[in-house]
Length: 150
Image (cartoon, rainbow, N blue to C red; front, side):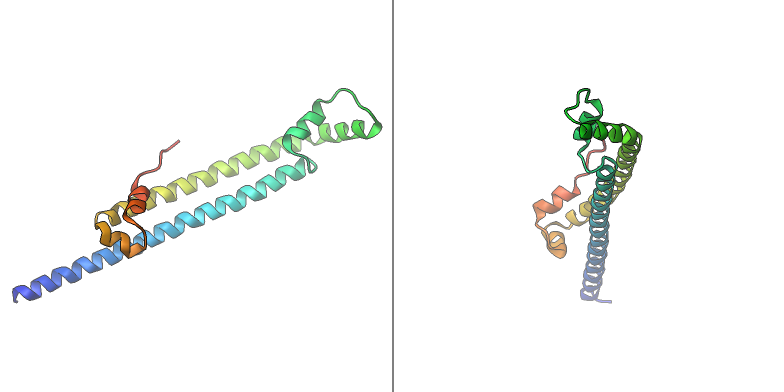
């Protein structure tokens, strides 16, 4: 086997390694984006559920209605009575929203950590690795930093 064949085999192996790393990075990036989109959709749904539980009012306005002591007309009194009856449902909806948001944030963080590891692997290939995935080297290094864990 000639030295030229050895070099060609080494280059072919390196190209396969870079292509595999780029494919792993793309999967990690897509997973991260899916986790973000899912979190955003879930948070929007839970926010709508909280608004519905508050009878269309913001949480602050709802709480102000519950605390109100003086009424100008019968409609204000009825609004307070409805708000007081709906308060447990509102607090349950808020607790559920917070739980769902926390669980979704954990999934986003896990996907981001995987992306950081894949980005670190691609950053080892330098400018060529960044070009393989369509990012600049600076952006790739930014993604390679592990996110802070709260």
